[in-house]
Length: 131
Image (tube, one colour):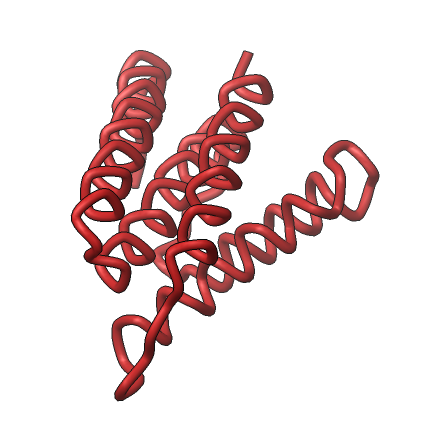
């Protein structure tokens, strides 16, 4: 995909806004005890934020694992970002996979609440890295 700088900037803004909206959706699902769906939305909120950062760096991929690997290589390994953010996005990705594909997966209220807090922190980090 070839983007002009104007289109890239617009898409980055769109992805960050989508991250925030999706995080809001996750909160609503959590408040209504829809934990499996909330976990899905938590991960995708972080994914949208990370995708915005990748766009800023001219990195494009359709693979979730590759995007997380790029983040680790570009930001975590060099020490630009605390390794806890790698653990946050990786754990959210794994739990999203469990929520979507495993049978009988159950998440506790406390577990999802922690993920929501981490999601908010992750999006704030993405916004700061985009500045």
